[in-house]
Image 1 (tube, rainbow, N blue to C red):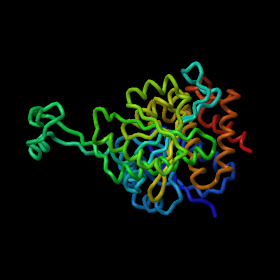
Image 2 (tube, rainbow, N blue to C red):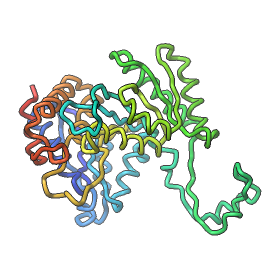
Image 3 (cartoon, rainbow, N blue to C red):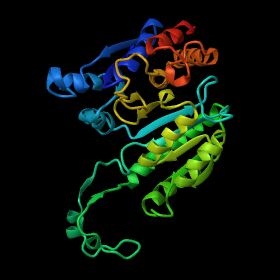
Length: 356
């Protein structure tokens, strides 16, 4: 049985890079049933909405969703894929491929995964007029003694980290690290927080991971504050294995990690844990280069690789990654961001030629 893939190209360069990856998947004759569905700003013009009901229905009937990128009007797509489908873990690997344009002198050996809690933290979209909480919590005091009323007019953003959310994320992180350990990786989880400033919220994540680790005696544990971790990623990127962190910190650190491995064009991801997983590049819509056939499709191709892994198609995933590695190592068909002259389609065609 072919695995059914719902493709949402999204906006900007999304359809181009996803299209390049899908071209590889189809011409390599992988056992996939790939269907493009209306979505994004294009669907807003044709269907009056960025996410038609039929698109949602088909996503929920698929084995995976392959997504491009979204401009602000298309935010409902992200809301649906992440919260609507319940995908609470964002898996963002960072790996250096020989030939990629890393700014580091010695990027060899970078092969880490950042696990980002995908549904809570600062990304609950809970903002509002500060007066709402001033009226509701007149006796509340900050750690340095101010009342909310002392701030006068303003706005607030709510950071939510639930016990249920942190426990399920921690369980996934430990299982993920153990699986990596079984494949020959170090088996280390590094938890990144700012618990010196946020002992109740960040402290909850640290506690949840430590409690879960009792059942994983082969794993080791380290912990760093996010500001310290930011510098360590630049200084010692090859020392890290699995990094587990909250939503906002994970979003920031993954961009940094991807940059040291060659740039955002190299970054793919998987979002899992819910009814149907989705796979997407980490980069945005890049409107300045959309439609020019110069975007680097590596992030989309790697997202496709993670999708194949998730679907149990390890042999196909391995052949796709090996082909990608060969293209970077040869250096003849690299995109502009990697110091080459190849376009999006030329790069994809080069990858396809090397699939065995």
